[in-house]
Amino acid sequence: MLDAFLARVKPALAPPLEGSPLERLHQSVVRGAEWLHSKDAPVAVRLISDVQEDPVLRRLFLERFYLPRRAMNVDLVQQAIAAGELPRDTDADLLIDALTGPLYFRRIIGHAPVSEAFASELSEAFASELASRVLQAFRRPVGL
Image (cartoon, rainbow, N blue to C red; front, side, top):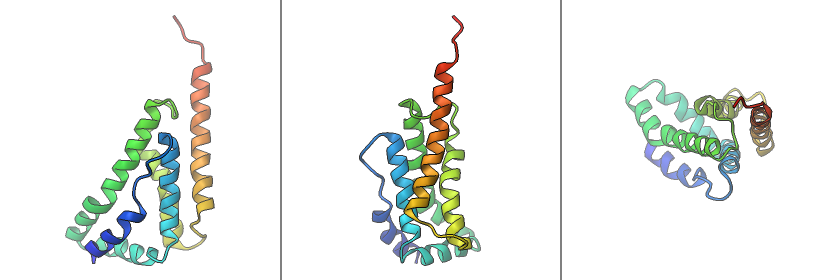
């Protein structure tokens, strides 16, 4: 079942290739929301739940699906930091958790829809907050 799931979702969650690192991160979050709103989402939620009970399946799920996708997003955050789009002190792991956690939470709990609009709002809110931190850092006087 895991192999079939992976074969099905890989094309839908392929890394974005166009735009700046921050734009590609935004696209990745929106694609994740689209996928969590798709007909494949119930299977994914069941699989995520089921692998928690089996250490071997959990390891395979993490190694084959979750960790590579997370690494791709962490890399985008690091590229955005290097490009000056995010502050140098941005915690990539925390940012990825903050951007993706609410999507999975909404899907699993079901209290609100997982939508492109929500994902865009979430991504833009974090980008805006982090961008304002970059601007504040640039405005600080530098002691020479």
